Image (cartoon, rainbow, N blue to C red; front, side, top):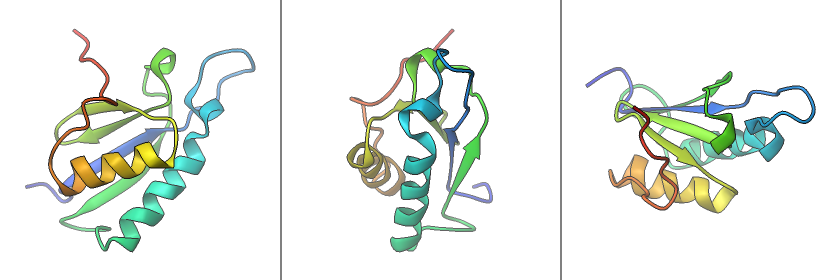
Length: 106
């Protein structure tokens, strides 16, 4: 196992007006929600979960996006309920949330 059981990166990139970007969908606010929820569940830190802000992750047209490592599972989301479902099902339960999962790219 690595330093963290799960490492989650939220794209919070802001592009010029008119260009697709995750920040236009409230990515930073939902990142803050995820951090608070992980801390409230006692899952923050070594051996557990780390939530990080990232620059552009290159999937702007599918945004907002986040990626969970070490599995490399990519998600899109709309609101706090989607973030809570990713936390509860994937980070806690070990089951990826198929309805929010983005397809793998070759």
